[in-house]
Length: 497
Image (cartoon, rainbow, N blue to C red; front, side, top):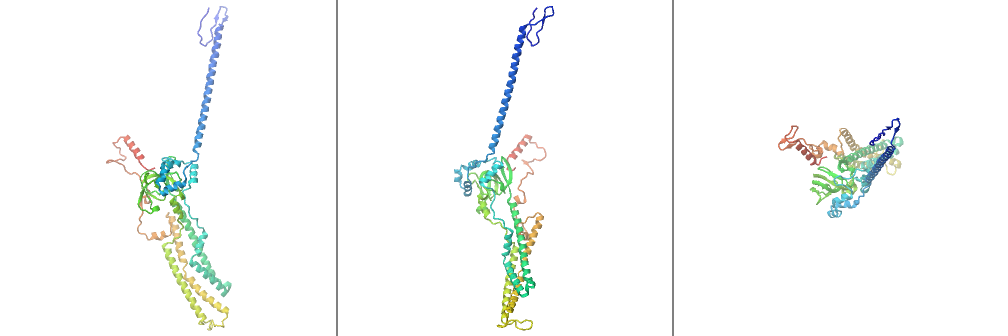
């Protein structure tokens, strides 16, 4: 008895011959072995393909990561900056449209400086440092700072101090000769001590005043400038502006460097500080794209490409030639010094007159000692006695000169004004010049600019009218999508940040 079964992968059923002896067909067993071998081979091939594909994917990812690394490293390379500083300086300073055209215009110069007109330059520190190395920093050369001993030397150069020192030395010498070292050095020594005290106080006061003025000047020059770097507007110090920067300009801004006009609307600047002309100059891309440092924006807004900074600008050369040392006198000090000089001259004239009269009386025999005898008799008076009498006469004249000079008056005024400046600093009132203390004391009317001085030059929306309807918190009949579109339009159509 035989049965046919479809190969289902299950064990082949056994057939009994009545003696309970199972009979299995050999051919079916062979087919099962062949099927198992083929099926196993297919499984192994499938697994092998999966492993190969996974290795290929991993290798591909590794290659992509390597490409990304190469791209990042290429961003770190320094810009070529294929234009020299001399050419950039001459183009702007001479306002030569012909030279600018030969160079390919503003766009070509921006490309040479590797500057994007909209996104500006990179904020990469290496890039910025490279631009500073090639084109310089936006700083001006200033005269070296005066040392403390220079103020001491200036105090000693005063005519009154010189006269006092000469009188002190003469008084010291004659006093020692006449009364000895113990008693004769009081007058001359006291004068010398007083002179050195006056010089020291005056030098210290002027030195502190000079250092304070330099500190205030540095703070006043360190203004913030709005630039575009990596596509974002940001405020940086004016000293950090480099060649290639895109600077944003608006009304009231002082232009920080020389450059070329990129984009804007109705941009006008005041170039009176450079040219002396009071008329405002319009800056545009066709007729006058040249922007000079030190000038001030009076109308419109725009952006500029920086081409020269620091000493390479005309403003930088002019500023470096200006001596910023604070050596001017206040009106009160000038009047007091004039009064002191006049009193000193009168005292000197009186002293010379007294000296001449006393010498004439002495040598003519009209002076007598305590016993009523004439002090000088020609041919009989000893030389030592004559010299002692002459020394006494000269000492009297010197005393007149010393007493007549009110040297402490200007010094007292200087110390008073310096103390007043210190007290006002405690109330957050910065005084750059001593003359401001006495000048503002008599001021009755102050005329000042409003925008940027009394106000912050920041416009803010307080009310919005659409037609005759005030758009407030009350719901409007206008559709919400129109409101949203209007807000987007207002946000895009602005020069603010």
